[in-house]
Length: 321
Figure 1 (tube, rainbow, N blue to C red):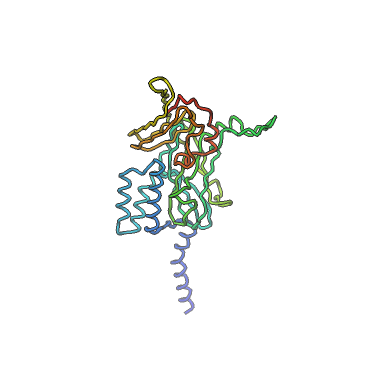
Figure 2: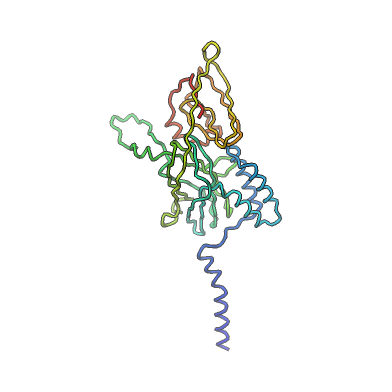
């Protein structure tokens, strides 16, 4: 009787062991219900379209077809498969709120003097509802505002300014949320501005609060970007008598990247295919910062970087890159 008891006990332990190992090894798949995930994807599409880089029409149609499927698990997997090629980084938050980051499948291509949008996929196993933060030593102002000191300290060396070639920020305005929703899988929008052209590397680190970084440098990745050169077109605009005038210029292009018209010295913003951009400019006034803070372009640019590049402009010379 006693031997039978021990045999039964050993069988129960052996059957339970595989489940325990899977849980401890962190290999369990992150799951999410279709209904809240579908609404999240809809708002993601709206935000990308609003910012000027919409999801391709073919991908949008396939997302609609996947969401309308009868099998919820297959629908969620299909939508992820369609969005993953746009993902530059995958952020995994384990049950202890530790953050681990791996590089995604998106092509790390930028444009000189412009902003491109990427997705960051968040696998939230905790679930955490804090704000996702991105940090990089290659992001930040390349100049400092004067404080009127007679002998200012050297706080920003030329080497440091050269390393700060980019600006990385997560888009937190509506229709996107400022904090993670707690869904097992969700996506956030990463805005990347490139000051330079050519190949540039950047270290990207993510966290959801102090002390959430995983050990062993697993919360950051090194991404090598390829920044395509921009072309500048100098326009001299006058009326028939050579005087000043007010005008409206519209530009439309069918290529994959478009840098809209902007006054000389301000930062261009990348736009997606088959979109039109218009700018209203008074040549007699030519304001110092023509991009209103309330517009979509103003929200996609770091104020610190925009201020560092501001300077007095010639009202008769405007540029489109």
